[in-house]
Image 1: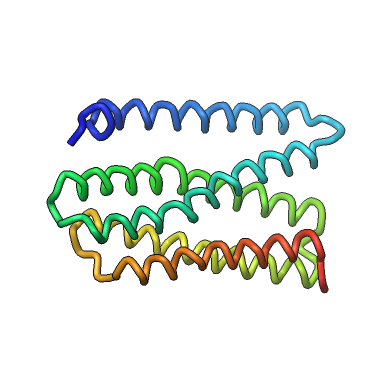
Image 2: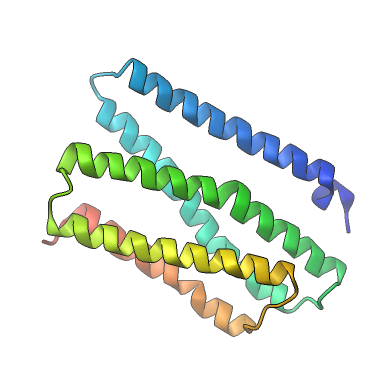
Length: 179
């Protein structure tokens, strides 16, 4: 295993960078709350979009890692590297991004729409399903870490389509507002 990429020192540095990014995000959000600009809605919306993009990137990439991980023999250097990659992606990027996407999204749904509108209810239902996929992937990260994966690469390829399909439905609800 390459210590430069997967060692504890690299992990600490990755966590530090993620903590700094979250802190910057929190400072911006705090300043917006303390000193709300006239266009607060646009700032919150921009931060929400950044969080959603980060979350979706992880949701689309993680199952691809699972596909490749299924081909690595348990206990091999390659398998151990995938375990580190999957754990860092899920815990350091995806979890905070999902939390921020939910927090900012619920704020927007409440402050702008008062939780009204059929399209908004449908969007929230799809986001709940997307969160379920996220949690399913979290359980898979744990299973891979314990060398207990039971799915094939083909099955993970199919699971890779779930977040993409839900993303399309969510975007259609937000942009088109069909009902």
